[in-house]
Image (cartoon, rainbow, N blue to C red; front, side, top):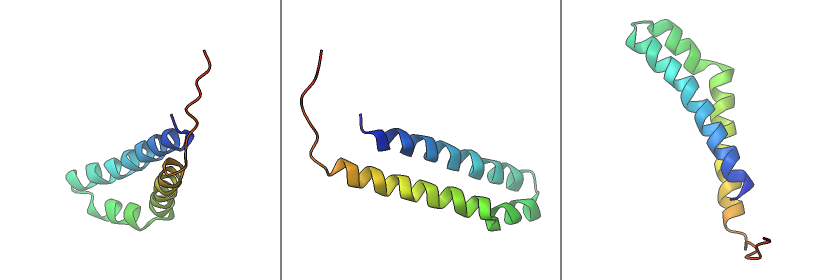
Length: 71
C-alpha cells in the first residue's frame, strides 16, 4: 500500500468531519455559524491539506513500484 494513500484517507476523513459539522449547523438553522465556519482559516487549511494529499497520492501512484515481496 502506498504511504500517501493512508495520508489521503486521514485528510479526507478530517475534512468530512469538519464539513459535516457545518452541515449540521445548517440543518439546525445556525446559518451564521455555518457561514463563519466556511469562511474560517480552518476550513481552508483542511481543504488545502486534502488537495495536497490527493496530489501526493496521484504522483506516487504514477511511480513504478517494486514488485519484490519479502516473506
